[in-house]
Length: 366
Image 1 (cartoon, rainbow, N blue to C red):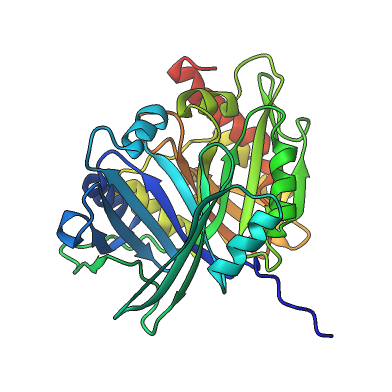
Image 2 (image 1 turned 90 degrees about the horizontal axis):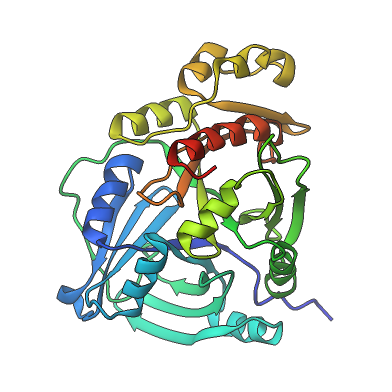
């Protein structure tokens, strides 16, 4: 008999939902700095009485920004505890009802049973399961003729210019969890969602003089969704993971890596718009060619922008990390350009983490 398809086979990343204090202002920030265009809105004007949301998009990147309208709303309590941050990493599936039922059978915690919305735009089905901390994964099924949509949203016309930052897709989404929890969540993604372990970095690979962490990367069967999971390791001082857990109030999404085909142009556009990136010392570039071999970009161009380079058996990658996007030292972004490499910049770990520790020291948190 032919093998039945896995109901939890992931078709792609539907969207990443943030809970924020002010969705309109957050939409302006992500439009002006990351070049994400607001394309849809839901709120009082569309029949929602307790919250408002903006859907922003560029390429395959979709950010959904949701804010509470009432002071005693559960979202308001979450923001008071965590600050602005990612609540939902939503995944596309072929059949949300079958996927939800399969997830529960495999041990997932069900939070919202499948809800069907059908209107003139098409058919949209969404169910939700729990993940690390209070982060969730919505399982999203949609069928229409015009592309992705959310029910009860109305389209937004572009009212102001949006910078062309060149970002094309979400490369990976990184979670920070408490000490001792990493293996448990790796097992969750394997058992429930069928993800496979891609790579494991221990505390010897990711360590500086002062701090260390451990990380395991899991990905779905197609390699489309990559989810690194970090936990702190013992060190002389507070690690970046411990700092995140303290100010976020527990486990959550630490950073989102956005892919581009021209990292220099993307960094220039984002810097001009106000995004601050972490700087690395000039000495990092002294033996760059000896470490990574021949690359298409000039060393001078990369050094001027503090862009890191790493090579593996499949090719090389370029990457850079922003400073936190808000007052709390929690969520930040990575910009990444891949030239064949399937890795995550292992050769850059020491330089990167020393740079992060310098920022921690400025905050008095190292």
